[in-house]
Image (cartoon, rainbow, N blue to C red; front, top):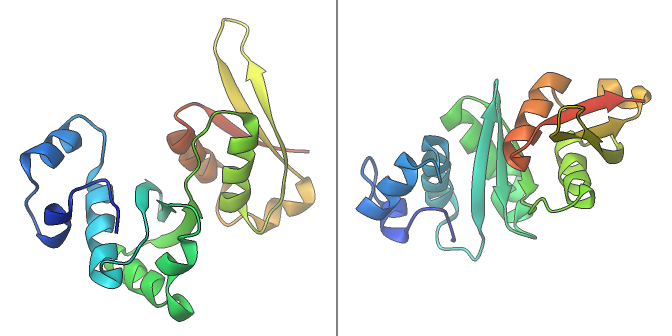
Length: 170
């Protein structure tokens, strides 16, 4: 299993090697990343899959994995997710990680995160004083289908994208 921490750190509890400790202190990885990576390793073992990052907002944890690794992460009958939910005491969504380089990338990410609500599109909004943010367009009829409150989902999308993201209903 590929993870943001080394294999030795995956197998040990409580301590990190100097390299991973430095990543943690510099903000490259978070405590949540370390905790989720270790839990996944205990559940899945040395399976060919990649855990990229975990993002948390409210009582929701979004686990981002490599392409095609969502079924492995969820496990047969949701076994792995149920265990993770029990351990973290939070609700969990597993999505494929996407490098955000365009509005299409953000649309794919938002579509995965907001499912079963459908994403109509993504726009870049330029602020008058300079700067910009992404506006994710969701149909008003899908408002009740959102898996969580819009503010919480905006927070998660903003953390993943590294820039401000707002959800707008049309």
